[in-house]
Figure (cartoon, one colour):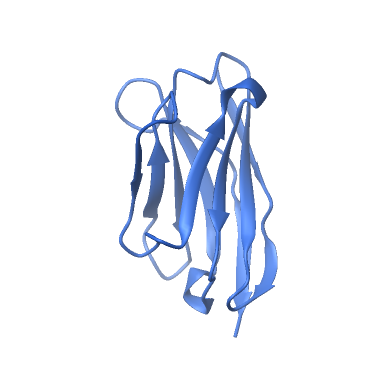
Length: 117
């Protein structure tokens, strides 16, 4: 079973950047599609970005396209989310998730991102 641990969250001013990491342990992670999501108490969970197992195919939500970049380093069993030009509305708890076949069925516990205005 793959286990995921997110890190890199924190407090940043609007316009700033953060890089989130999703470190995997357990089974081989390199065969999994991995995605980043976020959620606030007021909103449903929102898909942000995904990357396939080899890293040559990515997908982004319109809300973050051009500002966020997903990447992965399979040698390090880690997926990253580079977040630039952050806005207060990006404040949320950010989660990574992995899917071996279809649905995302492995989730981390999340990391909090707070963007001040």
